[in-house]
Amino acid sequence: MKNAAAGVSSLSDISQMSSPGVLAQHRTLPVVDELAGLFTDGGIKRGSTIEVTGVAAVSLASALTIAVSRSGGWVAAVGLPMFGPSAASDLGIKLSRWAFVDDPGDQAGIVVDALTAGVDLILIGPDIKLRSGHGRKIVARIRERGVSIITVGKAGFCSLRPDLCLRVSEAIWTGIELGHGRLTSRKLEIERLGRGADSNIRRELVWLPNREGRLNAFDRKNKSVTLSRSSHRVSKRLFGVDEPVSWAS
Image (tube, rainbow, N blue to C red; front, side):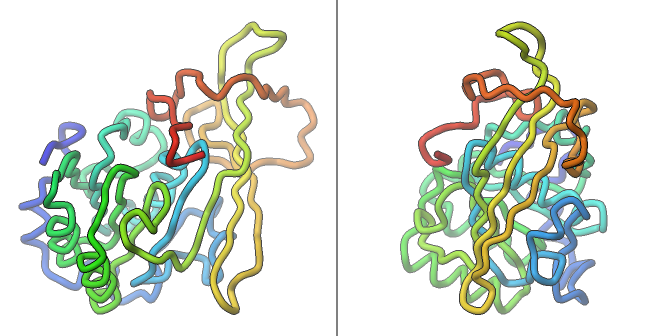
């Protein structure tokens, strides 16, 4: 395992935590107000799997963890070496409540299964593949233990079936006018689709990041913002890498 930044907790630290965790008495995991409208109960249902796709999938998935870490919960990231700890800290993520396994190799299923015993929320990166047997076992574990999973990319690649799909349908940067200027903030349109009775499509608009590098609600009444639809393959301020890779298109 490789930590993404100083102060980030190790896997051994988390394994020593008592289970259930700090937030186990709650039926849902908290999310910040700006994203709460994407969830029927205002938070991430425990034991559920959420699929996050689109050109800013890493950013959105990370933003969904802000309130969990702030509330004393534990978060683990498996296969997310592109994660940018400095910008994530600016976003409000409490990295001391995170553990990172950048490259689990062919042990991904075992690693994710072990993490379900000590964390509240697990992020699984786009290059992680789980065999169907591991996927079924992990689904049973998270439902039993009240742990939730967010897949960055299609959940089916991990042999998981999503309970909720979030897709960044549009990402527009501000700050470039007529090809000149500096990217300062990004507006995201997020589409949400659940299953069964919860299958109605919802949409939310947010700044991620805003000019201060934080998550903020989009003010639909503000007409003064200049938006740029220029190439997505620009240097992203939030996570330092191009996000529009094949799994997130």
